[in-house]
Length: 634
Image 1 (cartoon, rainbow, N blue to C red):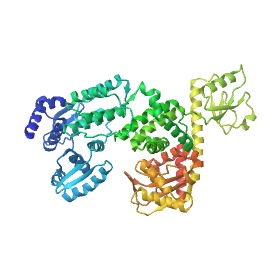
Image 2: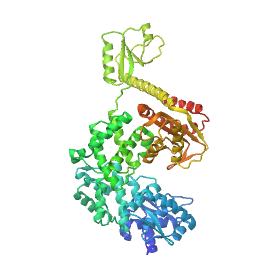
Image 3: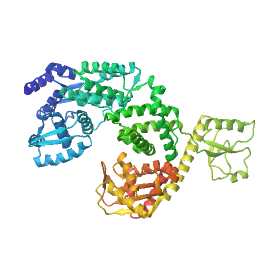
């Protein structure tokens, strides 16, 4: 039957001679989307010397081989052996023969057994396990967890988070544009809304569920421990009808409940959720978190709009965590590297929420928190670091007053006019300030930056002034950072190590033991640093790690630097060349707030790290670090 269908499929492509939608093919052969993908994979493996089946959002088509021609296709077998084995185990309800795996992967049975060790490690955190009965292997665990691991494997193999449906269409062979449009229409017609990232992830969840249901693998039992308000079952039934008519599957009661929890975890009611009922449920907790953030980081998140939106986010987050839903966030690594302080603050908030609500929050959830925190800080940010300005404008028809009013209108929060000079004389050489704004050239040298403007101060002048203000602020900030940052390093904690560390936890204990012996931290400091590391890795760009405690409770603020002879394995990062452990005292938390972003930005640059990693002494390391800070100023 399979051979005849494959021959029929090839003939169909040859006859059509153009792109074909998957629905056309499925109807013609009366097969499932998965079977179609398997047929195409078979054709691409065994007939690739003659032709190959291409896939795109337009569908599928047959393309004959030319001389020395290579064609990229999405329908490739998994490159990672572990992923291949796990996929086979998930799909095979009756088990997989280990000798079949050996034949399929062209490796020995002992090699497969070694891979199974890695498989067991990988699936342990998903509450799954592999059972062996003689030569047969079985994947055991809940259907929900199997679906979760399927999503992880597909994301890793195809290097995508699937938040856009184009990737989903390419990999799974479905046409999803109309489905996405209809799904969003149903949700919005009931005064709910979902952002674009989340909508793609929800469709990804649905597609994986369809794949499993087509294999007659259903969710059997689903317990929800929290009492959050789910979306109306009426809405869910509308979505159920859409899924059943679009994908030709039947959702049973458990699948319906799973779908209700899935949509509830990300849909925000634009009408009811703004009322007091939903808001008050978490508002006390959020107020407590805002207070602790202010105490620990000296950063204020006290904003009514932030509280309301974040309360709704926490409500949905609890549903996701309780139902073990994972929503990959494509911005995780970007925010972690570009806004390290905001991300670190979000890790702190995530820890408070986890402890209070007894839920586990993965890195991608921390990133969603960072989006809320970053938006709040962006709106609240004010230029309190005003610069002192001297205005020079010869007295004539009160022109200096007109310019003064314009300066206050355009730059009210950025500068302070400390002096207005209407006569240019030698007294000016004694003036003190950050910037001179003048309508006339100054006839002698003065050690203050200056901007020459027109008599009536036009738009070009406003731009010139703003550029100079920005430059002065940046220089002042960098100078302050340099003074604060360099003062925190301790020569006794600059370590050139020949140790062969097994993992990040050995490194953390090694450094914190030295800190403890120097009476810089308390005995339990290592546990606090490891706790923070377990929340979210402090490795950046696979080259540097900056571990630190979740609390600012060091006896003395200090920064340790360890440069290993050989790169260290740090979580998923395998090439860590520098470890810089920060111990921060509560009284100096303002310094941490000011230096952390800049320090991480320097260390996130692979070129900088490679140069720093060759430092043969403490002095050489500090000199190189100062050079990098100065380069950011220029």
